[in-house]
Amino acid sequence: MSKPLSAEAVKLIISVLASDRGSLDSSMKRLADLFGVPDVIGAPLGFGYTDYYAPEMGRELVRRFLSFERLIRPEALPDIKISTNRIEEDFVEDGRRRINLDPGYISPAHLLLATGKGYTHRPYLRNGIYADLTLVFREKMFHDLSWTYPDYAAARQIDFFNRIRARYMAQVKQGAAEGVKEAVD
Image 1: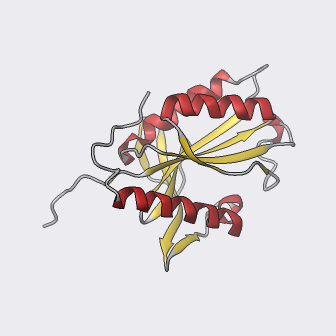
Image 2: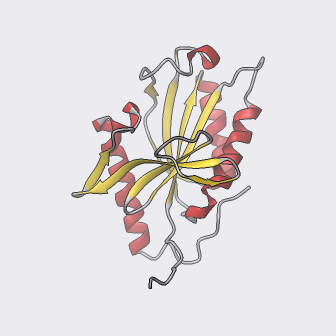
């Protein structure tokens, strides 16, 4: 019989997709106010992988990935997604979103995203939030899966996530996971 143990703390990451630089910067400030200091901020990237967001947000989108210094409890992810949904709502203009926020976390074994959309590979967590297993860590690096979004599967992004994981593992090794508080609104 297995004995349940608490999960170790994980590294919060958030993708910020925005229709303009001002919304991008403002939303990143809001995220920092809510979740603490970002410790890794990726370079701004043009977003041309899909037209999914174009009708609502336009075609000239920019994305940045952030990770946060403070580690979180993995069970806080639904609360974090609900908080980021509220921030998205604050940036709605004329019924259209200006930003899209996708929170998730990096653990020793995987990169997991939170989503409000269920699917075959997305188990339900709670409060209308599902988990999307996006990347798995094996053979010393992250690997994509057949359903991984192309922008997360790109070699440049996998390298970026590998660097965030290395930072996270150093934090865990240094004992940063002790006494971690949930990041909830």
